[in-house]
Image (cartoon, rainbow, N blue to C red; front, top):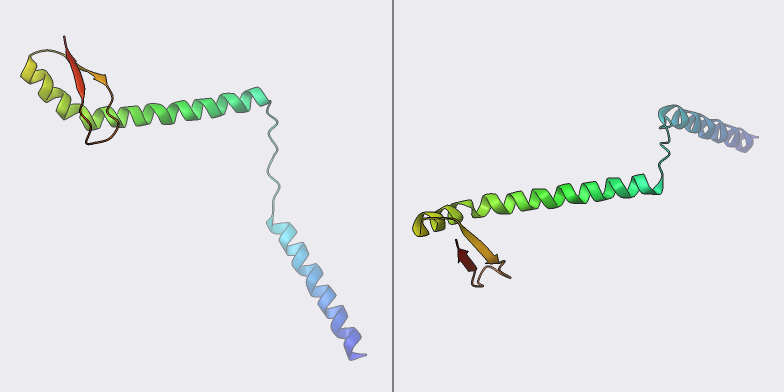
Length: 94
């Protein structure tokens, strides 16, 4: 008899926990999107990341670029990007 009471108590506690969990979880509204919209968002994100990296690279090399412009008295453009930090840079003076 005590065993059945323990089982009932266990069931009741389990149901209470389940109800409490259901109360805590609220359903988020589902946003229906087409495949095209998802792809557009992904491309836009990747483009923004790419632009941010490009801007960061320009900021990092700005002092070097200014020194070249001052030395050669004009606009010096990088002809090729270097592969690693120890590689030689090729420039073209205009």
